[in-house]
Length: 214
Length: 282
Image (tube, rainbow over all chains, first blue to last red; front, side, top):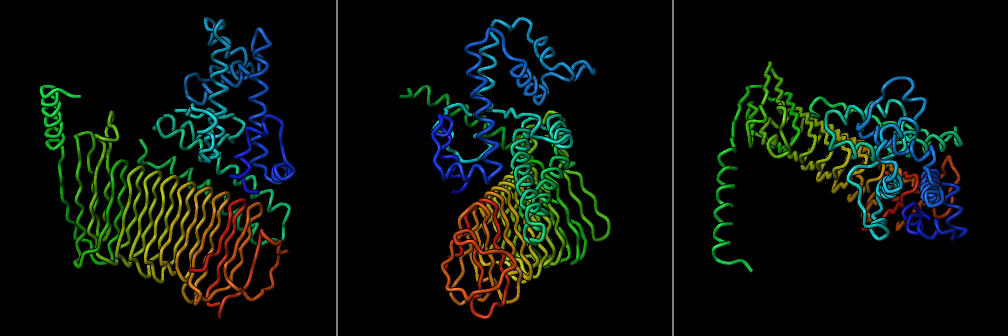
């Protein structure tokens, strides 16, 4: 089973219906396993919103990360980074009554982004919402990635979504190539593939930092 | 349905807009005596770049701008010619656009960076270095050249390339090669599809690698190569009757194959993590 075929069954899998073939693919493919894990997390958080009066710190953190990546809020000092939930809550003092709408929108947005980044087009049939700007969990990026994205965001905000999506793809490639090379240390092609994966990231970085980018 | 009066008003407005656009459009031509081995570089953020050969020793750069929000910075020193679109503050994709048409000596070395616009290069013998972030790259009729293409989102198409050394790195754009015979061809893509149509030449090394993108190579029955194809989590398919070949890894049916066709003049490696691989007979 390929990744594209796997993605066709995502709605059924999120509803708890999985076949042996799908489970085997998920166990062997870290990219698809990560995708299902992310979607399950989103689904769980959305479910918890119906029961809780206040959003969990995790929800606030997700919203804050998304806003930080968009450059809508910035670091204000050590305390800001250490208490993300409080920071996010401070940014929305008047919005608390409407927190559920914001959070749900963010979650729907993140859900659409995750599918969009897989590049299958399958999500069009599942959701009519197509995000204008992806919101991606910060832990998907290294510090260097985040610096690069911040640089693109400051010089060419419209291009940032494309760079985010491509960095995600490239990072997934690197993760898979590293795992393959690690499990096959004497396999010349596995080592070659790892070099190719790193080269892909070099391309994204060099284009992001190109002097002609405005 | 539009009334006649309304249609007339719309037509008038359209004419005014078109005339304003035409008035803002400016075509400038620059000539540089740089010799047959000129080194030419162009950097452009918005708009297409076309490069064609000329018989002389002069590099001709024709640049069409659409507003005063962009300036053309030029530098000429000996064999070296560098042209950069200098986009001014507040420019948009429309107002910052520059269309370039270059005529260069056929043996010139050409280096192009295009952030968004398409790039087309043809009929050169010098080395070519192309970077395109989102625009497509189209390279055709090049011989004996070192072709280095780096693309992020745009498609890359190579047609009728002979005896070159070709390196293509594409993150998401599809890579399509028609009649590309190289001493060494290396294509690497994260999620774009890689397609090769040709006979793999007579002494080349061809390495096509992807992460999730499919790889499809189509060759005639008379082609001569040894091939190794592996997809860790995708399917592989082969239409040729290959003579078995020893490999350094275990051949899993359906996910890898290896063998020799005819006299194995060239070496072909098709490698993917989860994309499908298909070696097709033409």
